[in-house]
Image 1 (cartoon, rainbow, N blue to C red):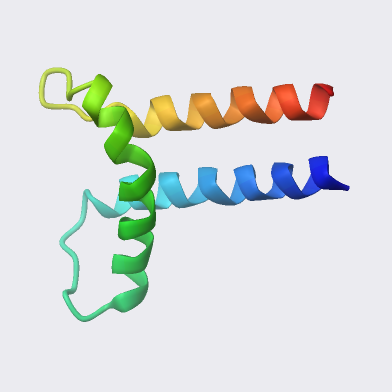
Image 2 (image 1 turned 45 degrees about the vertical axis):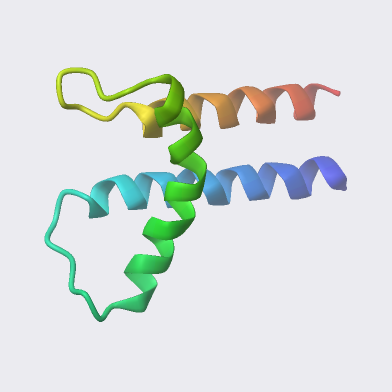
Length: 80
């Protein structure tokens, strides 16, 4: 039961990271609260990763690293 909840939470976070990364490519409407909530949530996850891995050639790879870390955690938890 706990494994499934963690799995669902990791999938949820993974999709939010993907959506947040895609939203950085488009001009954002300043009044859309939902978009800013997604970006704020993903920034809380990605900011610590950026402290260790800065953008490479102007490309931010922190979303990829975050997704890989989440998948590793998911594999470990589901393997227990």
